[in-house]
Length: 211
Image 1 (spheres, rainbow, N blue to C red):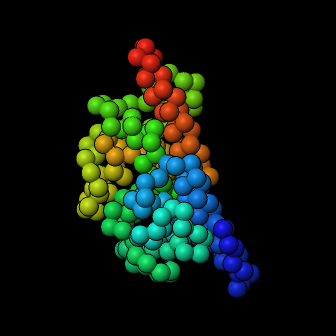
Image 2: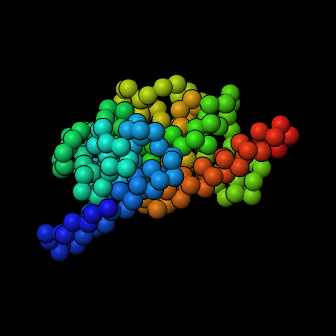
């Protein structure tokens, strides 16, 4: 990743640049781990000291192409305030209601990683209480059994935000997962432990023996 020289030493610009770097790193790691699907997934992070603007990936970019510099800044009305490109409708419909209704959710990661997604494709798919890791995060998991497809309307995002409640991980039936956190680090850590533990559960299930 190429780091550009900042034009100003103001504290706010330093905070914003650091946020861009951290969010871009999450995209790059997700790509390296094979957790995303083409251009269809999206991550956002609230701009420091703002309650209605956020950084997000522009429509059409692969996760491997995303850098700190080409993230776009948007507001809660969907306007692109900085950067080239546009925000996808489904991205806007999912991320804005969550950021708006859950101020502690500074980072929102929506992705289709293979193991969590496989669980979401099972009838009444649930993360079992079988691994010791489940003791760490199961009480922070919400299940959206009504999820049937892309969030094509803003009202669908409102429904998702309500269903998330005070949880940090939402397994979305027939779809994937949305993870939130007060920082990119926290949200990405939640995503990682959930994805790996779901992988352990699936491999145990494949034996045909009882968990």
